[in-house]
Length: 398
Image (tube, rainbow, N blue to C red):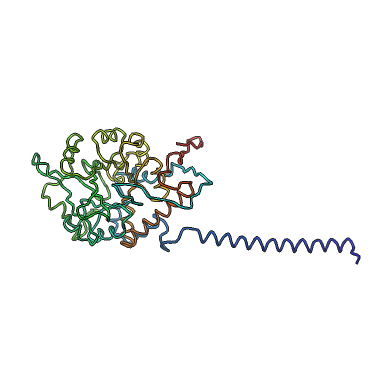
């Protein structure tokens, strides 16, 4: 059969079009497979309305009276430190490593002789102790503060074997009863007398100026009391006389628990904590609620970590809103990371379920960050995974 040149051209065009059509169908099929794989492997949606901690904050504060919303969310004076606590994380960039087997991510660490995977402490109300305890489960650490509105004698009757605590000490009569704000850290695994540590807040010799409390005429909700404090007696106040050489030895004489100092923010004080054989420190600026204008907690951590390394464990608190924030704090030298406002937002959103949601969101984000950064365990996270962007646009490894 003879084909003219025109017939041959038409025939070639036909087969070319057929080839393009089949190729397009194959690519479309592969694309659908790829999209299906992405959908199957993306992080699960834990709550249809709350995908991030920012969403959680918004949902929690939606129906909260302004007086209490501002009390929890704001800080001292012009809120400079409060805002910088969050903004500081954006100053550090993650340097990912690739071609590493990250099929299994291990979040396990060690604190107080146990191996928790996440941390949260918060001020608690009557219904909150049980919710925090239930949502903490056995693998997490949480704290109860002395401003809790359940009496110390009732804390162990919240249905979870929580030990009794008292948030005051008698200093053997030298100047009456001395009281400091204490955070008592415990776990679900301990017995009724099994507290692991006392956290002494050392950044409140006097109370910082929180303007929202004056503007909103802040007052306690009706029926709310502080039985642990009223049980001590009258005349309670912040102790502006506390000093290293007297406070630490005296506390040692009163308890066998670990003694941690919360509110350390300078290398000089880290050195003093080591000198006085304190068991641990928490780098914190009280959530920006005390002295406004101090460095962001993350910047203080970077400043203090080199002094503390290998000599004293470091806890970190301040501005954590993402799993990647936890990663950055660990990379800069924190051994453990605590949260304050995040569990409060969880409680305000959905009680126990809300706290669990907050923890799950952060842990899922942390696992994802570790995998994408090439870290299989918490111990593998280090300063080499971070960089800062200089003013001239050059990325500098820490």
